Amino acid sequence: MQRKSKWIYGLGIAGLLATTTVNAGWNEFWGRCCLDYHRNNAWPEPFQSADRQIVKQHWEITEANGWRLQNTLGNELFDISTHALNSAGQKKIEWIMVYAPVCRRQVFVLRADNAQHTSQRLASVQEYLAGMPAGEAPPVFEVDRVPPGIPGQYLQTMDQLYWSTQPAPRLPAASGGGGSSGSSSSSAGSSSKSSGGAGS
Image (tube, rainbow, N blue to C red):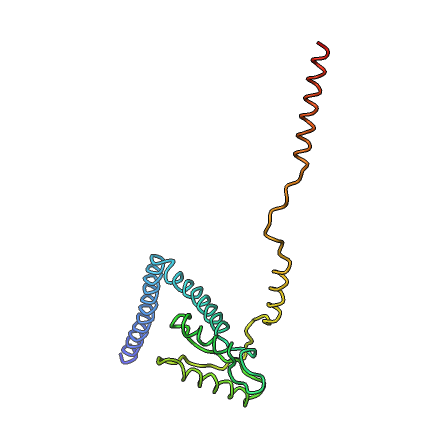
């Protein structure tokens, strides 16, 4: 009798474990079905929004890099000996402060050949910004990417060559070929009329 009770007790435990295992798998199955159902109804979201965000982020990075190059003060905007801003560099900063969008009013200073010269450049830029009209000074950053550009002397030479080879703004003189041909035609016509009169 005792052995039979143990056997029944063991079967009860085994059945309980089997029922728990089956129920756990069944719940996961229906949960997955519910998830797939909602995903299919919402497609192509959220994947489409994620793709749009990736494309938008790419163009935002590209735009930021372009403005960084536009607002970079290169080597030609600093004095060679003192590493201070020259007049062209000051005009560049004024352009950034006046014409650049408010969110893009940032100044980037190209790194010099050593840390001391770079510090002199940064100090010169900060000093010039402090002397400008009252307003919030833009942040100044140090960069190592050289902005694209063409030497001004080259551009000046090309401009002078362009204007020196321009033709004179005058119409060409009228040729006498048209008048002489007209006279010849008139003479030929008069001769033919005379010949006709003589024959009659």
